[in-house]
Length: 448
Image 1 (cartoon, rainbow, N blue to C red):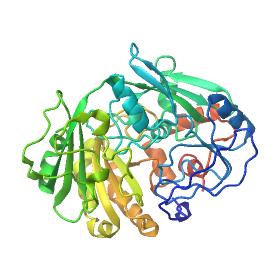
Image 2: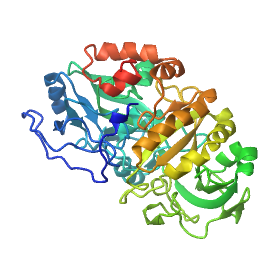
Image 3: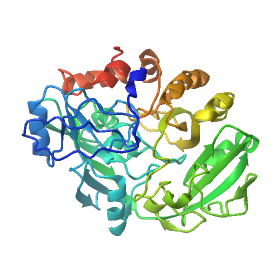
Image 4: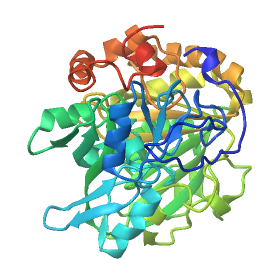
């Protein structure tokens, strides 16, 4: 990734006024992503409120890019020409109890969908660390939560409605055309504009969350899989500066998981109060801990819907490695602890189950992720990432598509065996490259 990718810094998101999808563009002040590290390359932003309006926009413009809730840290959703925000397409379309599915518009946020489902007696299998992200954007980039038995958010998709480059609407389903669905779910914005998503649901459930501090690294190394399997969803937070893991968050389903609520956990001590993953920050933004039961959507994320997630002004990188290499991979990064420490807010380590999605970092491999929340020090981070990627190279890491990485496109190609087939499918739906942008040209097509 070139350094010019990250061109401006700010912690304020710029709200864009409504534009009729059929009106002429008016140049606006350009949007930023939620953390403020990226300013989008055009101020031409449309806000359609229906599939028909999306179709008209797609037919009208030669270059276009769909934009979700702007939670990516790189240019995957950027465009030099036109942006189409799905923020006004945020409704629940239908709940189908016999099929065990819910269909939603792509712009709905998980934090908006989850309370609706819970009130109806249903739930999703998992959530990411923050609920502020849209369904369409999350599945496109293979965003995930944690849990050795939990696939990423994309793995819950059973159907998609997509407006492709000629303005027509296609429907993909795990029943009618499962391989095309597997190709398109983690579509990186290359297939078209996702307008509706159908997700698997299950009966609602309750979760409790316990936090432990000071887990010895030696205990983690000796018991890694047992620790990561101690709850429905488990996260390790580490600053790489000592031989103690800072915090362990264990989220347990009531009535299913035994959970961990004693005074000790593999040598770590139970927290005496709610904590933030970044120890110096107050915990008021975080979901309830201390073993207090609550609905799934109020415990599986780390952060509450109504508050600023994480630290706000930051950068993020994340690498997926096979579960069986977890301890070795963590150890390899730990050797860079002195270089990492001055620029890091916190690292989170999570587990994700394997899936069949063509461009998912978890395709056919149970994985752990090593996630870096950085201070917003762009130049320093871009110097560090190649060192981290080199340390992880023996384990064939795959990056999170929506976060900062510097891996060479040829390396990416070697790690995605379905990449050639994916490009053939993209050519079928977008033969002229209407939805291509600089990110895709470099990382998928190897240009630049």
